[in-house]
Image (cartoon, rainbow, N blue to C red; front, side, top):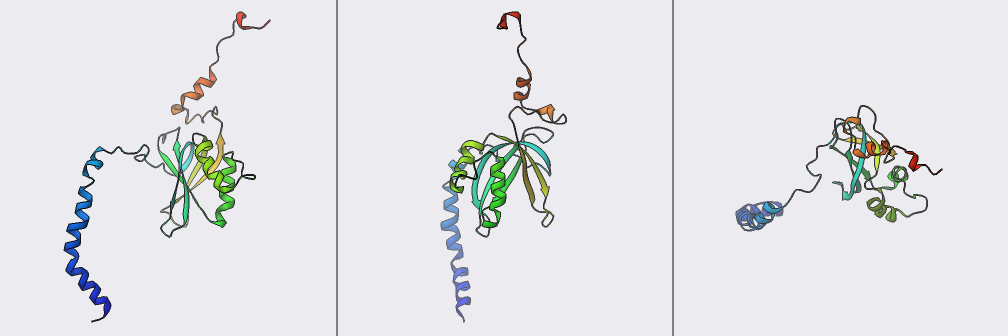
Amino acid sequence: MNFDDYQIDFFDDYYPLFSQSIFTMSYADFDDDFQQADVPEGSDAEEAPCGKYQCEITRFFDNETQDGTQRLNGVLKVISGEHAGKVIYKSWLLSPSAMPYIKADFKRFGLPVETTRFSELRRMLDTDVIGKRCEAVKKENEKNTKYANVYINSMLSSLEKPSPKQSEQAPSIYEEAKTTPPETKDDLPF
């Protein structure tokens, strides 16, 4: 018998012992916590289909791909049109070849990319970019249709009116910006 056969036989002999004592007990320990937990905001949001959208940047987070490559992710919430409330996920792989694209997006966000270190810019995303609005395009990846590419086209001013097709669900800030109090003779300085 070779060593590989021994490992399989050993595991098969003791597997019932492991599965009952370790795995089931640890799950039961979290039953109460699980029942009391609230679902995080936005985690139940439906992803928007491919298209062009006006979005609000709601958060950034870091994680790794399956092969261990670091990745920065942004969550964009669609703010108008038929898909208002749905989200788009924008990801940037952190690699030397991706830095020009990351730098271009960060510049669009209004960050001082020419004078600031990347590590400082990452912190600025959370403090200076969340809540800003942008125009984003989500396109199907031609090489792998399982994935989509997301492009940040431009930033929107907070008073920019959505296109007529999308104005039906526009945030109230647009309406507030259009209304001005009527002028009366008493308001004139002369």
